Structure formats: C-alpha cells, structure tokens
Length: 142
Image (cartoon, rainbow, N blue to C red; front, side):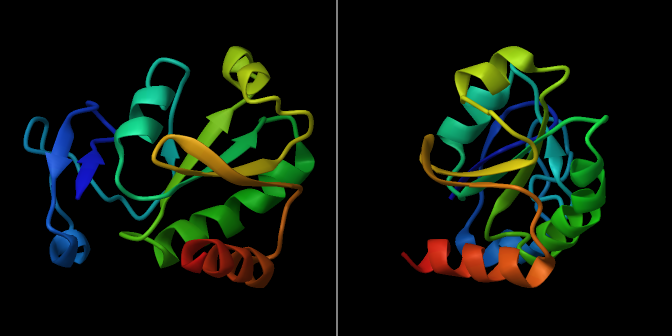
C-alpha cells in the first residue's frame, strides 16, 4: 500500500500486513498511520487524499460549532478503532474556507468519505459512535 505521511507528505510503501506495526515515514520518521485524526489544510489536502491507498474520512468542522466540538471525541475514538483501515482527517472550515467551498460544504459537521481521490459518500451532522461505525462498515464493504 502507498500511504502519505501526514507530517511531510512523502509517499511511503507499507505492506498491508504491517499496517498495525506503527510504520514510520522513511523521510521524516513520523508515524504514517496515526491513531488520531490528521489535520490537513488546503495546501496538502488534495495530494493526501489522491495518493493515499486507504479510504479517507474527512470531518469538515469549525471551532465555533457546538455540534462539531461535541462530535470531536467520537471522531477521535473511531480514528483509533479504524487505524490502518481508514484515514481520519479534519478540515477546519473557518481556516480553510476555500477548500470547504470547493467541496460544497453547506453545513457542519459534514463527513465525506473519499477513495482514490474521489468522494464516494457524504453525511451531514454529528453521529453517535454506533451509527458512524455502522455507516463506515457498510461503505467499506460496498
């Protein structure tokens, strides 16, 4: 599998059976598969989503949004649960308004699932962990 380093953007080849071994980036030595959500910006979003072999679940949020803040622990919990199977990414729409506009984000939080650089599904609103888990399982098996 080819995985983009969340720190430096380098492309790393990691055998699928080694994803659980906490692989490090060959360039900067950062964790390639962190168990926490990755914060991206307009500068690195497209390259990350397009080049990564794993599905990428993006949480479009803003710091002033109450539902976004209350959903953050659930998103982080799911990032830990799905580490090595799905990349969990956060986009601050307040700071990255161009990226939010490009993806037609009309309400927050909005979750968008990407595969091979293309959006495959989207959900608006904060979900409880069991519902998010069920939705992800369905999308990953489809």
